Picture (cartoon, rainbow, N blue to C red):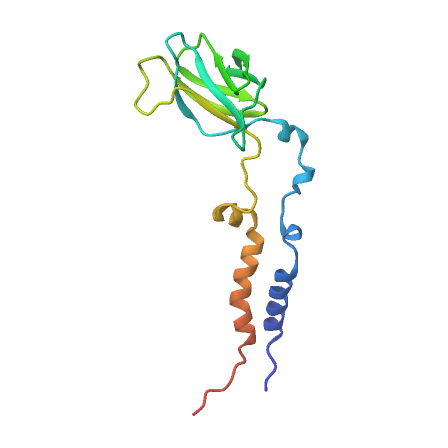
Length: 181
């Protein structure tokens, strides 16, 4: 039985080591607990939604938590660029109405959550436009249901190590044997 080359043993050993190390050692980014507090306090933006203003230019909406429970007395601010256009609070059912707006793109902020809204003047909105906006406050990530593309992007080194191990282990284990005549 012949000895394998030192390179094969090195590749095999590094592959096994890569599988045994925890992912946190291999990640280049800082742990979540060490993030800047300023970033954690900034509101998170969701996708833009089309909302029709009523005849008086009033924007209607509802603020709920991740379980769908309305949030009462939540401060709601409507901004356009750097200017505040309206400020209000929600009622007991989480509803709000802020008025005297014209059509345009607004940022609606409530409880450190933000949503971009494309507001349309009454009777000018395209089909499928909603009458009110919905702001969901809280963590939008449900543990255990991370999409595959985000998992692969966050654990790049682990996935690369697994692929390398799948390729390297069979190569390292295969002993070069002379072909039979």
